[in-house]
Length: 535
Image 1 (cartoon, rainbow, N blue to C red):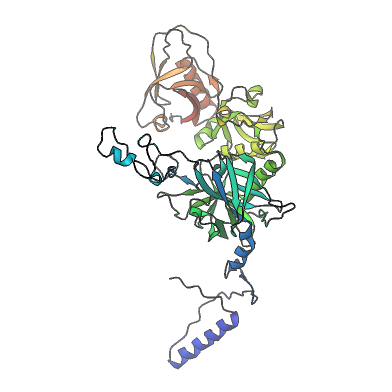
Image 2: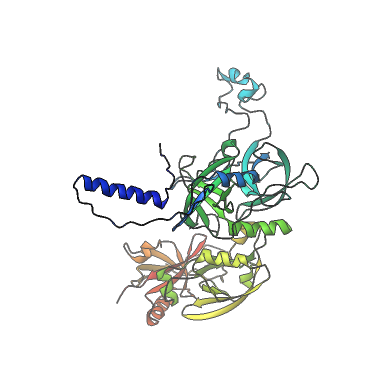
């Protein structure tokens, strides 16, 4: 068992040091004094933390817990789906949700009608999942689930996760002292997984204990406390530190805080506090190969949650600016092909049909390097910055277009509620062409063999097909394969192998060490920067 000893005062330390000198002298030994860092702890007799040269350290979390626990609630949902802390799959595992316990408690075996045990299971008591009726069909009953949340205002606004209340027909909240209230849903934001509820008070002008979001960003190594309702055990407190910040968990463009305080099923939507009792994050997901806590949990940062809650509270929805493009990161080869000094910005791979960018001068192949003069680091940075603008705002987007800097004004739209709409791409158009006789052209500079695209009856054709990729070439390493179609080279459309050769030649004359290809693989369009062979 790990035993914690209180921090002693500097006077006690000096007393022990003098005693050590006396012992060493009595034994006739030589004492070599090592340099020591004297830590002065400012501590009151009733203090729960001490101030050290490296920041505050807790002697106990009890006072903080007593301060914040009355504002933390358990969320009870009826007729909802799965309501657990989102579980991130381990690497290589299929991305399947945690399976909820079936209504009825037990799963009856799937037996054929003529099986000798079929009648036995048919007549099991109701609590075993079925009684009479169709075999293996549990008696329908409302599903119940639980999560966590916290009150942010005296009039009873509650923050939780969207996935906790998604699909709920009835929501109620209970405090640690077991008093329970119905709650109404004010609004949700699936993109950040935030939901806002409002407690229905039992008497007029009823006031609730509440907490606030932290204004100061948490640092890696800061102490944190998570309070929630894991496995239905409401009012559970765990402690740890901020393990990392700026985590990308594959859930949109927003960054997450990583903590090692224990977070389990039912903790979703609960708060993570700092030593001042302020909310630094909303617990939303865990990484767990086994399904239980392994010390890796993720929380929505307070700044993000606060901004979302403000909009939900004022209008019930969240409005974000929308550019209407598909984007990807700019790597070193792509930067070289575009004439960028270093890998930065976001590459526009496709323009969304009917989106704001489609009505502007933005083009596929542009590298967006700044918005309203603010530098863009990568694709996620661009997505976050665009989302910060209100819809109908006109922004100045600076792009690098194959060695030339351009500024393109774009009037932003509203981010669609349906993510599939946001990801729809502009389908390339092409004029019908006569079916050419296939010819093969070797392009040693790229390690590719090219041929004309053969069209079927009634189909349109465009670009140049790849018939072979040289093993060990950069093109092979970038994933190009036989059957892929090259649509553009350095931003210029190509119709035959000669156009590709001309694009490569121009890239070399411009001093590029890589050439940017727009490639169609099946129905997928992408940009690939392929290094040019020296010579």
